[in-house]
Length: 81
Length: 266
Image 1 (tube, rainbow over the protein chains, first blue to last red):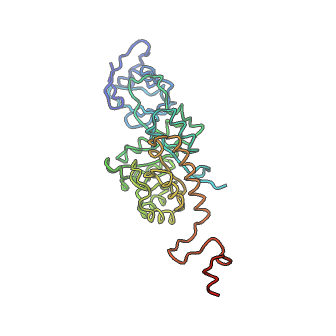
Image 2: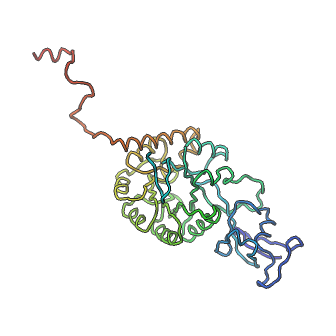
């Protein structure tokens, strides 16, 4: 299991076969952002992602590994004035 | 053609509208189309975890290819929140850099915190954002915002969501007289005549959301706002007559009247 704080809420993500566990060369990394979004049914949606206060460009979703305790913000555009 | 230029881009509508508080996306879209607005504001919010993945997205209803989307920092009370929000917005909108900055100071009045707003604007401008800035109607602050590089100054006419109209036309007048970038009244417009008054003062545009979205008939009010802004702009360009209390000057000829009053004088 990996714990991520997503939009302020602790969320646990199991590592399973479809997630293609990655090697541990990033201090316990078990999934990348593309895989996380897949898991959350958000892949391909119009969203933007911030990890630990830094923007993660869409082009880096595949290579950005997530580690236990990472804080993520996943945002959308909504109606506003 | 009388056009509005913001950060080098030309617009033909001087009405900017928000996309909040509508019943549903269909009404949002219908009202925005009726308003004729080219620039529309959107907010950036956390995605609802566990939401139905097929839920419609605002950007599908209002595609960035058809409008100039203006992401805002509504609800942000700190420099850090405002900056992070707009960085996320830029990523979300594929590098789009025109943004509306507001840093609020108080949840009851939604009055802007200008000290924090100026700090945030400086950082954003350094990062390459084109900042349209929500401000109090203080002419000195407004000028400072222009001097640090904001591309439009957006003073309140009255408090956000209040619909109280143009409360201090004299301050707006001073801000307009001093500015070399567009001045757009943001907040406080309650009905069409408020928008007209703002434009007659010489504002370059009006931004409104609540007045349209919470009208009994939002689409009709959107259409009214469009006409009001156009009417006010034309009146401003035409140049109004001077006001005078006495010394009235009738529109019709003063001689040749058949009235006996002139005959008796003979």
